[in-house]
Length: 240
Image 1: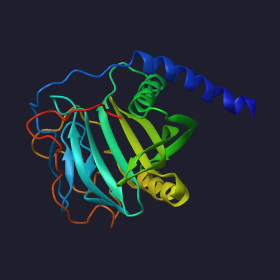
Image 2 (image 1 turned 45 degrees about the vertical axis):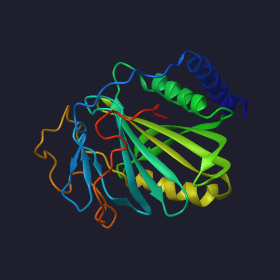
Image 3 (image 1 turned 120 degrees about the horizontal axis):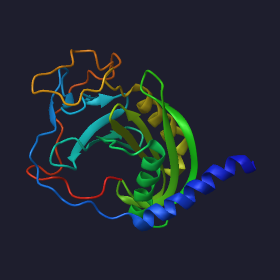
Image 4 (image 1 turned 30 degrees about the horizontal axis):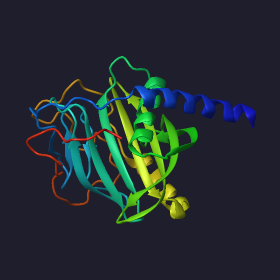
């Protein structure tokens, strides 16, 4: 028991220091459209990474995208589940930051964004159909979720893909944690990355239909193009 508690205590201490040092990132003006239409109905592709965002993944429907930098390399796309839950996928440059440092910094952002949030666990999980290993930190806090203030369970899942990090933020009501957690785990298993990580996609698609490894029946649902939350400018707010 003591050996399992020590890593969590160390993480909490590091998060406290990172939260104290964390500051909002400067705003920049939009110069690049980060998404382009994909080959499947309703699908969009992040130009910089080549990652496909289907209109639906299992029980989750895509609802919005955000851009956090002028070059379109730092983005997020949100999905809402039929079982009340939200999964947001973030793609951003890794730079020189190792995954442990990135995990602490990203977790500190959660603690800043949700005062009173507590870290409740850390573990390794598998993401994508290829079962790539990722780091996960769990949180509990109260927030306004789908129209009412309530306790929620929230996960931060982080993995490296070439020169980028891919982060998943998963949140659902605490009182349905069992079924919502199972549903969001299926999302992690089915959401695919490209087999390679190009430095940037050109305007013409470099990724042939199917190379994104979207599972049959999951990525083929129709839907509208992704709505950028702030067209004409970079979306405001911290990436949490």
